[in-house]
Image 1 (cartoon, one colour):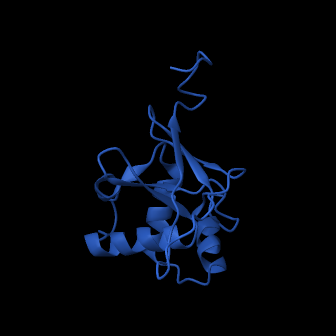
Image 2: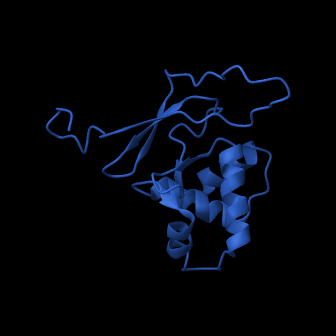
Length: 145
């Protein structure tokens, strides 16, 4: 489901306008082999109509809100974005596995990210739970590194 037509349909199913920026960014994330920073995405969108920095931030935030992409901070506190592995399903709170070697992000659907009890007056907007390690492709020996 990576053709322009399929991606446009996915955006329409979210009740959204299909814009060139949304299509290009979603296609880029879907085709990327690892999670990308805002800067990485800017550099890869040089061909075609330029996408300004603010529009790119808005598109990425919208994709995350819609469950079509993940937004995770790396060790240097730089946000990295990747396509959700099951973007055609609602994207609830769950954990992610982040490969420290290749940077890929995998959904761990079986691990629910439970909301902690918050003090009175507090309201959460997002729960992030990430497991870091080595994915199967990078851990070819099968043994922990």
